Image (tube, rainbow, N blue to C red; front, side, top):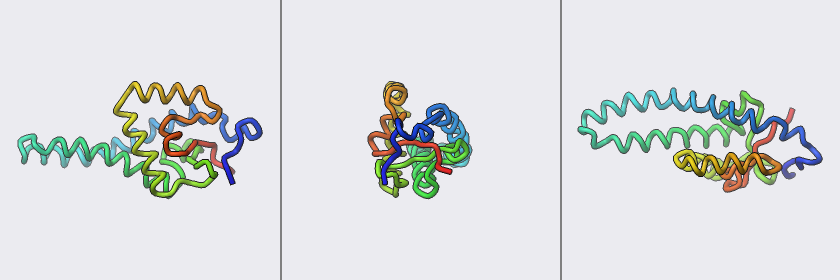
Length: 149
């Protein structure tokens, strides 16, 4: 099994780019809610350590996003936003990502999110290639497709 060909099976790729942007917004909201709890803990840690523990809170923010994306993609084939938008992550073989591929995908996305020029380059790359892959997709050997019915 492999990924559908964009020329022979365009229905797997139609509208994916736009729905991916909407899925990202949904996932930002979900991660924001999860980070709210971390922020409350961060305030306490910050006060108790006179600010010394705040770098750990920043790291925890990144790890929450990575854990959310890794777990959802590995178990469901996509994050909550992706599932709501009817898209999912698939490997070049056509399979859903296992733990290491999901982790690589999530970590690469998070790293690019902290580097705006890389994120912009990744979005431009997605507009120019046939499968709409972003750079972190390419790194993880994955692509986003419409969920097969």
